[in-house]
Image 1 (tube, rainbow over the protein chains, first blue to last red):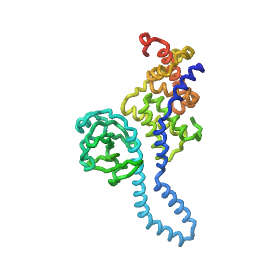
Image 2: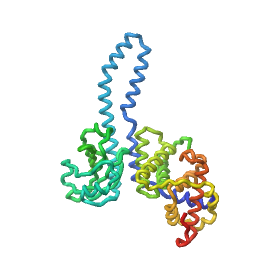
Image 3: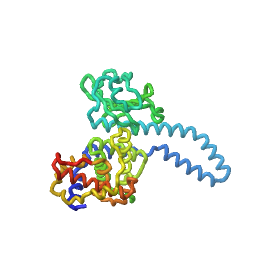
Image 4: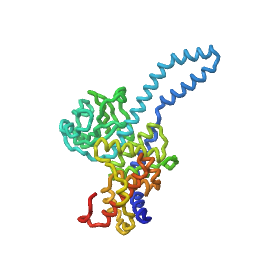
Length: 203
Length: 164
């Protein structure tokens, strides 16, 4: 391949770089790591293995202790896993909200939007949650939430402020999540589930 | 592409963004694909290396576009591609970046991808073949076809361009 031509192509792409604010947000997301529960499970496995080398009485005590602790630990790990998932969702929602991407479908009707966004694997309808009572739908676009297809709905409050509502199917992964409110980067993220759907509102 | 390397994260993210851009040819789509891929890498606790992140970007781009059926992946006649492809030596004087961007937009995603990985990232055809799970001949064919199309798009007036 001609060297100058290669140089032109190379220069063309190397002129493109991520906007600094987007790069910073992606770097900030590094706090999302393997859930603590997985690491704790590994630690317990190691402890059980080492107990096999103990004298029988000690081993018996250790086994009884483990049997008693397993339900407690599972309960604790499940709670930690859900907290981690809620944090991941909030981080993703805030990141997308701050991008302020324009709506691909402009309408103030949920019924019309449901017809337009026919790739969603669920039906859109006006959410009944009281947090949305004062908000007017202005449009939407497709997006994903934790790798699951979702609708990113643009809402406007009576004072003209823009809010973003994410709606996705209530999958098994999301089904254990309790209603919650989190603060991320100065924004409030409220999560809840209703009618087989999972909602996340950033404002 | 096989040897993991440690890069400063900012450089890594820029590289991955350019790769996403070579696939999507659209800034917002590239940012979305990169964000999804980066989240997946972080959630999986995977290595923050170029091969791993590039693979995540590629996977997310292909998944999104299979769903939307926006990118038809048609088979390629390798022999005829090699016959048809030019060498690119006539292109130097026509490579204004705006025109180049418009011309790149006319290529198929797989052609831009092969061109980007070989020309910008400096991978060999063998490495690109391994990464994209295609025969080496197909990769070479994609690059030659990309060059051939760019040559037509950048050197011939619009009315006279042949459409393949």
